[in-house]
Amino acid sequence: MTSASPGLAASFAVVLATLAGGCGGQSVDPVTGGAGDPGATSGYGVPVQGFPSWRERSLLVLTNAVRMAPLDWRARYGADFSPSLAGAQALDAYPAVEPVRWNLGLNRSARAHSEDMAGTPCWGHDSCDGTSWSARIRSYYALPGGIGENIAAGYPAPADPRYAINMWLCDASGSACCADGASCDGHRRNIMSGSWRALGTGYGYAARSPYQHYWTQDFGGASEAPAPPLVDGSHVFMGSEIVFLANWAGADAPRSVSVVVDGTARPLALDLGGATRGTWSTRMAQASACRAHHFAAVDGAGTTWRYPASGELQTFGEGSCAEDWRP
Image (cartoon, rainbow, N blue to C red):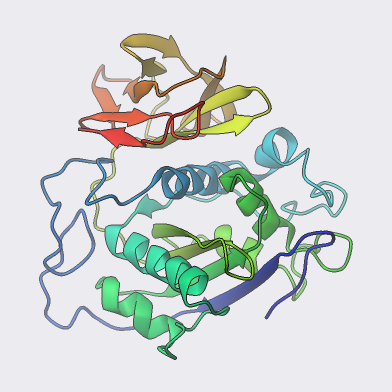
């Protein structure tokens, strides 16, 4: 199904589906989620052959922030969106759910579809060559369980992951966001479904395509990736500030959560949700070039967790920064 956003060349579609099936005897890598995929020893959160990009990683982090604290998200990171999420009481009926874990196969599927829609171009869940959306996802994602997909296109440059997820959460119907439970809130329902355990996000761009910017979320019902409590982390931009965000989901509250920027640790404060399931953040003035960073958290037992497990994320989009990770 498609609809248009007022005042924007934007288009949206959603598919909700549950497909049963096993892995067909394939050997499934617990990190990548694909049969024979490289990267099993790369470490948690470490990009694999360029997956994910900054926009894709940020969209994962934002998705989990919404899932763990939907109403907090609406108040803190959705309040400036128009049409109003709060005015439609969007997310009121959706309880908090567990975060989803990054999956390389789903990331590859989502990016392939976004780049296909941008470059061919075409618009819809099925691939431009007619391959069904489910066949495409299953060609990348070998784990059993259900699959689902959100797609969107047409956001203004620079492409902003926060804007993209708020458009999905709004599910605009005419000049207002869709009400919870109505037939038009399929994207929101997908994002807030407790059935999903894994997620891959994809971004594609082509200047001459009808919508230029294309986004895909591919959801999976199973994840065999390791599940450290420091789930993920990334940065987004709000006005003149850069916001560092990290998601935590553990048995106990962390003793501390921080972002280490150019070698200096900066504490994060609980921003959304609760201490055992929530999003931690800090804001800084934007700089003019790349800043290397990683996230660190100490759990209740004194164990330190790092995201990514090795290397340094880069502040892609900050000033002249065009890198998103260095080994």
